Length: 259
Ligand code: SF4
Image (cartoon, rainbow, N blue to C red):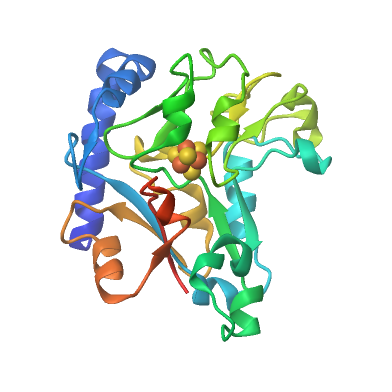
């Protein structure tokens, strides 16, 4: 086992111990009390994603990451565009990362379809605007949803500059494939709440990587701890030029893209 994987599993194991002690809900809220402080988290761990869009594009229309995520989390397949529920989806690079393009950017790069999702921002506006603290940030990075506190006001939907949040206008259980959850371990949601990517915290607690990362046939998605100098994601960010979506708005997003 390589060092980064060993370190990751050790960290995840600590998370499991912490959560099993007092129930996952209480533990998650306690973790959420921590804050990210200019590059160092209170947890000493900062989970993040990096995406190599060249490797992704080489798979020509692959949607394995989306399929795996949506199956893992029982994401309803609502086929009305304005009511669609999305945790991870694809957009043309020109749309998602337009600020990095100019008149001379190649058509291939403009049209490149790249995965987009919640950026698990260090400075998340969705958390600031939520009146009930239904959305909150864990000290180790993931921005979470507490469905029991969500009142469906959708301030977070408006506050997110990335369109990363979806509102359930109807009962999402009516839109599950074959009417049944694809993953009986993961809770379904109800009408009137907002949902989004959680960076697979339920999988991290079991020592697993996010479902999208596991599913990618090209190894285009990397997950890891930015505070671990030996991690694969740190090495990737140190040896590749990467960008983040709308970094100029001050959200400090943590999905990093190699173009
Ligand atoms: Fe919140 Fe949007 Fe940032 Fe995710 S991407 S943390 S939903 S502001």
